[in-house]
Length: 186
Ligand SMILES: CC(C)(COP(=O)(O)OP(=O)(O)OC[C@H]1O[C@@H](n2cnc3c(N)ncnc32)[C@H](O)[C@@H]1OP(=O)(O)O)[C@@H](O)C(=O)NCCC(=O)NCCS
Image 1: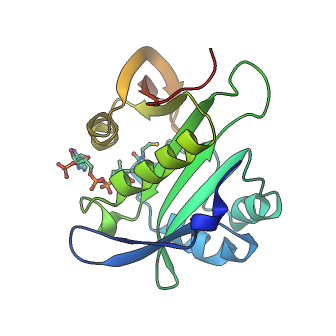
Image 2: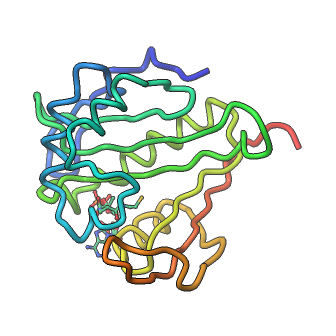
């Protein structure tokens, strides 16, 4: 079970700015779409879906199921400045593995927000009996690799020439793993 009672949750960054963390809800389509429009093309190149299309974000809002995908937003007032998602399965062999993805608005990077958002997902993962968190990062996303490693993720594997960007270029994919401190079960 995901502990939603902890939201909305205030956090204070290194620079003293206070933000609110809370799960995305159906009314967030406009502000999340605006957030994605600020993400630079080089970061968007590796997105799985075309988030420049409002209907993509609209579809997420209409099909929200926190047990499968938990999107945590970081808000400064009404503005989304960060989005971190925890993806999981209810059944099957990967039910104890959560996949994390994080995006921070360019003007909010390097002030600890990415770290705070992954820490938040780590807390949720621990409370919901996940054994591992996994992040998939393209080799060129050096900041992301560094950020995850600083948070205790270790490189589990690197797949060479494994993924293509939107222009068809091949890239190495790093799989980073975080082992939960108090795993349950096997
Ligand atoms: C990767 C990302 C989430 C990091 O978020 P952030 O809020 O800037 O990260 P933090 O401020 O918490 O920094 C954490 C650590 O990452 C490393 N880091 C952050 N930016 C970096 C950069 N540009 N170059 C190298 N290392 C960097 C630092 O080691 C930093 O720790 P430090 O400040 O103690 O030195 C953010 O840059 C981003 O959204 N990037 C584009 C999307 C992406 O790559 N997502 C990951 C794929 S799931």
